[in-house]
Amino acid sequence: MNDFFKKMMETKGYLRNENSSLEIFGNSYEFFIFESFEIGELKDFFKSEKLDYLISEFQKIDDDKIKKNTSLFVLIKVENIQEVYKNYLNKIMTIEEDEYYFRKYVVFYTEDGLSKLNYDTQSLIDYIQSENLFDKFENNMFFDESYFIAMQLIIKLPFISLPHSNNHFETVEDRIETRIKTEELIAQERQVNDILNVFNGDNIGEQLDDDMINCLGRILED
Image 1 (cartoon, one colour):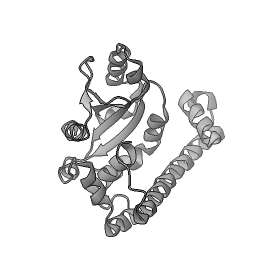
Image 2: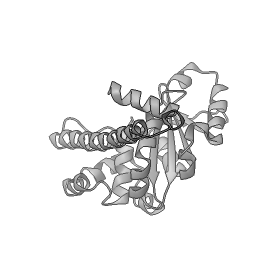
Image 3: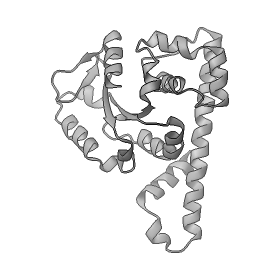
C-alpha cells in the first residue's frame, strides 16, 4: 500500500522531503508519513518499537512547518477487514484521538481489495459516488472490501473532498458521517460496559489502569 500512496502523492503534487530519513511527502503546508504496521503492533501501539523509531527520527527534523502539520497513516494489511475492524475499533479510536507528534489515521486493507482500486483520487470519488453501491455500504459497511478501503481513504485523506456543489454528494457525506458516528457510539458503549464491569467486580485497583481512566474521561467529555 505504500506504493499506492506514493503514486497518489505524486499525482497530487506532493514531493518527498529529502532532509529526513523518514519518507515524508508534503507541499508547503501539509505533510504525510505512510508506515506499515503489523496487526499485532496495535495492541501496544504507543509502546511499539516502530512508533518509537518514527518519533525519534521525526524529532530530528528542524522544520516547524513539518513538525506542526504532519499526519501519520498507520497502514495495516489484514485477511478479514470486518473481523479486525470490529475487534480493534476501540483501539483505532484511541490511536486517532491521540494528538502527540502527529495526527494519526489507521487504514485497514487487504491485497485483493486494494488491487481493485485506482490511486487517482477522482477515480476513488467516482467509485464511491454510485448510489447503488453506497446503499449497500449503508446497510453493511463490509459488503465489499475495495469499497470499504476507498471509503476510509475518502474520509481520512484531507486532500480528497466531496464536491459540495452536488446535492447527491452532500447527502452521501452526511450519511457517511452518520454511519461512522454510529459505529463510534457503539464502541463507546462497549467501553463503558467494560469499565462498569470492572467497578462491579473485585480488585478494582488492579484492573483499572490508566488507559481505562483516560478512556472514561474522553467518553464523559463527549
